[in-house]
Length: 544
Image (cartoon, rainbow, N blue to C red):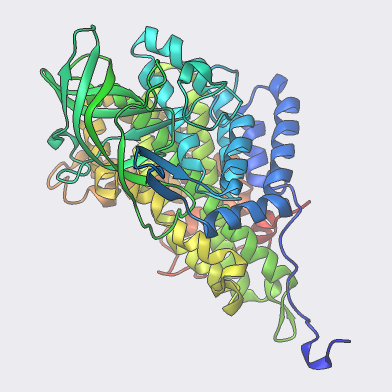
């Protein structure tokens, strides 16, 4: 019999064996809003089944094991042959396999595919974010490959397959394939036009030999990679297969794996090309334009990934507070804790609502929606990914010391939280990209104003924020130096307009009053006490 001094009381039960999708009212509402009614029943069933997997004890254990057992690089075999292989824990393969089978790489060819995939990506990232990299890169490679119809016909069926076929073999022999990407180099980073990797044309039309290095190459055990290199006519996009058609391995020397703050289960690598065979994608000298479709799609996945991390952090905080007694009552009923939880919930709901709206724009595909994406994706990527870390840190604090220990899962969320702000261009890169869209593509601003204008007249604070934003846009003096401020306002006004249109009144009121109306402090938990915060918290509580 256990000693009475070790009887455990007043501890929240683990948040496990629940449906991550159905327990998220905001996500469910977004799917119902953006999907054709004829697709809803099937989508709900698929996403609910996927949500039950993500919330299961088994998958949560897989996530922990994959994170605790990071990948290992093997440059040579026992005989001294160069093999450049990365070994992953079996849990990594199980997670990645389930992501592929759930369609997280197959959005482009099915009705409502982007909304369904976005919801699934948001659900699955909550189990373990590390496997999101190859899922994202594989999904995002499709628009770049479509610039070359022959390449797309060859590779797209493999990339959109729902079969995970691991191991290095010729892609033509596999039931499904994964893609990675290599753009940045040591000397340039985000300034990819400073790349020094060279591409020498070979005798066969469209084929080249690459020599150079990549400072960050994602998912190095993938079947193919889109990379940038300097061809005779300038920076060009290339497809580098890991294994050639005759079964020999392409020259793809993995120099080391990055030792990262978070995202530990995923392999990020430095690679060297030395006579590496490649196929040109698009025209010579138009590499950035060719690969930009992939970059835009992965940037949206950064928004989705951060929204997922925020959702899981808030769910854990609310769940804990709903079970933990302190000072004579449940934490969730204490006015100050309720304020903190409601503030976190607002940030999470705004992120999810915006991310799903952008996914729906991909499904629509019309000119107006494409123009909206041009401005809204970098703005959302800038703002939502930056909000992730303070949300994760505050949610961890809601659990007190329990949140600071590894078993709670919150430290893993916190370590992961800065990543999406850095991947696919850090904050300044996104802000400058917004400026380029404003200066070169007037249709993008018009589409944005049409979108936020649909909520005009519904909230005076939103109306004032739109007016102030227009005044900022009219003043181009020192625009680069204040780009971050401008992009932040673009994102907040867009989030506010969506919540006014789609969220319950108490959510929209609290968001507009704090984020747009200025009735807010500099830390979470500083909302006006007169708001209906209990309803905001209850909406964020994981149910079912």
